[in-house]
Length: 142
Image (cartoon, rainbow, N blue to C red; front, side, top):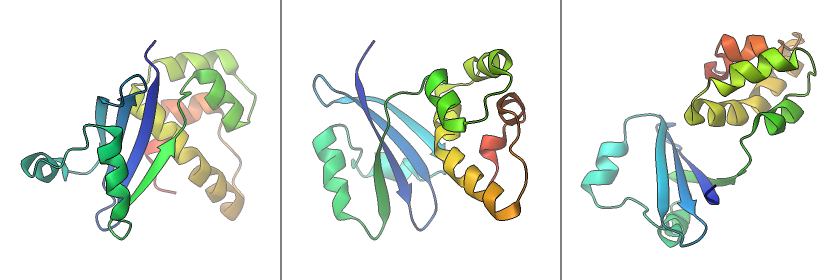
């Protein structure tokens, strides 16, 4: 399996979110995901697409406009099961998780912290993971 470095870019003005993955062997772009937003056309029109890790690192100069995060490489069910931290209905949860696209899996990892903070603030009980996945609660705004 290809070893990848993943960056999440969030535009502060529009809240657009993009995910860039680069091969660790040569630092060339491997995949791109538009998680949220429509700004991609401007990026392609202006030949600003960060096709290499060094080009992505150049984007860090634009701190007022974007937030760039280097994010984890392990998007496995086991990693998410551990992070979700409610150990109920594992088999059903794993089946639901395996049906998700990579973009949705990444959304799950990115939304989990906000979900946990929301639960603390509201006092609500945490949903079983299988329910959270099947109801696509990772798309909710917490």
